[in-house]
Image (cartoon, rainbow, N blue to C red):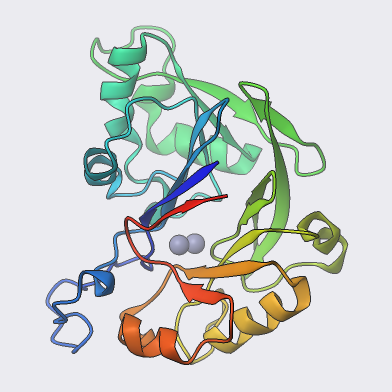
Amino acid sequence: MQIYFLGTGTSQGIPVIGSHHSVCLSNNPKDKRLRVSVWIKTEKASIVIDCGPDFRQQMLVSNCQKIDAILFTHEHADHTAGLDDIRPFYFKQGKDIPIFAQKRVLDNLARRFDYIFEKENKYPGSPSVEVNEINVSESFSVNGEKILPISVQHGNLEILGFRVGDFAYITDASAIIESELSKLKNLKVLVINALREETHHSHFSLSEALNFIHLIQPEKAYLTHISHLLGFHDEVEKNLPPNVYLAYDNLVLTI
Ligand SMILES: [Zn+2]
Ligand SMILES: [Zn+2]
């Protein structure tokens, strides 16, 4: 299985438009972060988690040729705003693109992208999706690849993380209820969000993310959904515990 980090930045991305913050002005490519997304390639399936405003650019840079499913963690714009850009995959693959999300998120997407969900009198040229509702207590599969949804708290919102084999991806978490922790045993790689050092009402801070990693004990952990306020990539990474890393855009892991 290969994990391709398509984007590792928080909602505004890095650099932030108009910002003169030193991290936003950095020349290090690892300090440039598109909105969070990963592409999971297994022997059975090509799966993208979230479809934010940078989706088109991410698909071009990663040279992704086919999408078997898009899984949505939640409805916030930094995770969904690129849905229109599934058009080339819809044309090339010749069928509705399967999307998977909780009912609340599907309803939200259907309101915001009504023309994509329209079944009658559809404008020719609009993409179409095959809608699949996720029940957090049940695993589901894409091309026979088993996916386990994980309930995650994002402030007051219940959102989803996903486990595929020995890999788990959680973003935008501020807490995870204890009964979900058993789904995160024996991981080779855990991806978890870490916004900045200061606390935030709906995102783990760096120390909260490190505490969570300590609790879960994966072999390796990668931090994502990073704000420019966390600091320079190379400096932050120097101070992380062993086997904990900052993810960066276009990082590829083989598990
Ligand atoms: Zn987000
Ligand atoms: Zn969010």
